Image (cartoon, rainbow, N blue to C red; front, side):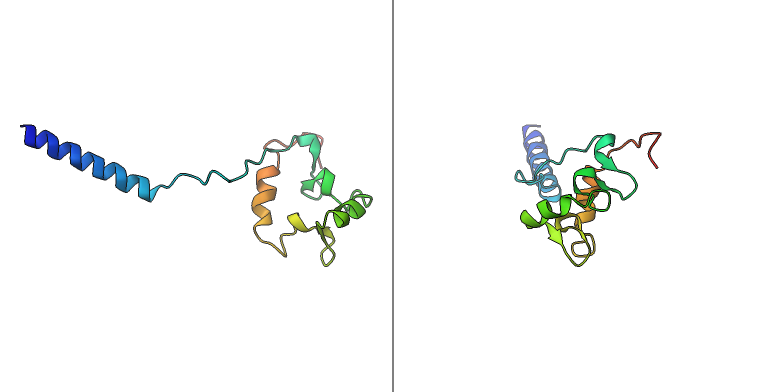
Length: 104
């Protein structure tokens, strides 16, 4: 009986170890991105308002100064999906979950 219990304990320990290898924990250095509030989002151009250069051309000099400007596509480099397809993930993480009723 003790042998069976010991064998079961070893098997369960092994199964837990295999499960941990198959489902590794998320890296600790992954930055947590907080969703923006609906009033912080430009619903017309699907960008954060503080980086929507179509609505506010005055943002361009600040983006250029911060080396966050894609001159080829006229958008913040960090949000340029044409240059970096991973930027879509960033936008999806920032986009508010609820759209205001008065948004176009």
